[in-house]
Image (tube, rainbow, N blue to C red; front, side, top):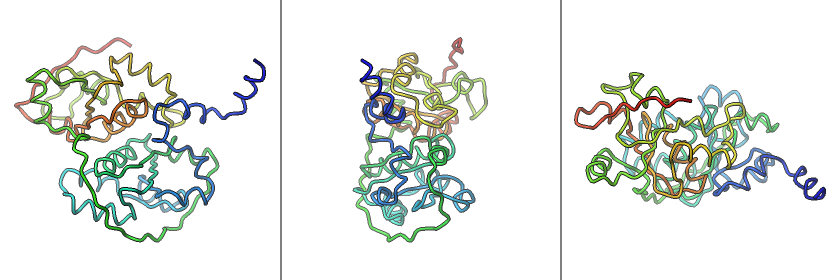
Length: 291
């Protein structure tokens, strides 16, 4: 028994957490990228503000304009995305790692968009920029030279939900698990974020940030994630659709569900910015749950 305990203590806690996730390959630990030889196997993307990137970033990382990607998903087609993704040297077989300084909210959106367009191996840096600094990772101000490629993108439409999809499923009572990833105040209609405020009928509520450890920026350990989902009435073994205000926080929830072993969740990307501003969509105002 003492031998077992000693061996356990020799293994870093982060590795224990990662090994226990149902889909650990969705994450990369900062320690795994500290050596230059290990980083060469990945395309690394920095989703922070450009000013922050220029001050210092993970060596070899490229800056990505998160705001342009967020808006571009709605308005740009396949050809535009092939150019945008290809300019980063990414094709569908690339191994990509993304980080940010906003508790994965921006990085997860980029993760989801790349997965939607068929890039198969996309991961988040666990703990983000803060995790990299805490691990003693090197900083660089060099902007890497990148050779553009022409990726053959294929939209993974089963990862996206539309307003019409949800209206049909609500009418036919086949909506399944809808997960509202916004704050409790938004979910209950206590804050104003659209013409009408509240929730999509039947939606379960779990705030996106509850899946993240606030101090470390890391995803919570597997047992804590399982407890969170169960407490919110979410069965990770069943299909789910996530939403928020404009697709970002819903991307974090989609990532967390998949990390916990769920099938790829659909992201209602236009989310409440569309639903709450359409007079023809049904809206409810759930009673706030007691903490």
